[in-house]
Length: 146
Image (cartoon, rainbow, N blue to C red):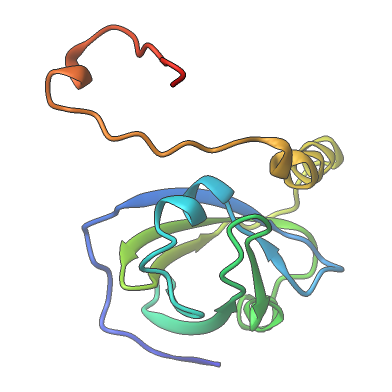
């Protein structure tokens, strides 16, 4: 369902891309993003497009397999999408995103690479590391196993 929004927030906290795949009713979400914002992301997301239209989708809150599970096909209808296309998400906080849908279709090679990455991303391990101001100025990070 789309409604009229009040426009864009210029404070972008994170940007990631996904592909709107013609035969899938779900969308793959960047796992690094899901882990980084796991404590603040709600199930209900608000997506604002460049015309100020607001679209509502449901996020599964699974950091191992993050997906938009409901409302994704409404994006297809609202944007008159007939094939596969790229979608950019700019996260502005409070489960609100600015989205850009890129017209045209994805190449078969891009689609295969994207799906392979989405299927194997779970094999990666993500670490959260807090660094002091001094450590962020260094040229490298040394991992010491305790």
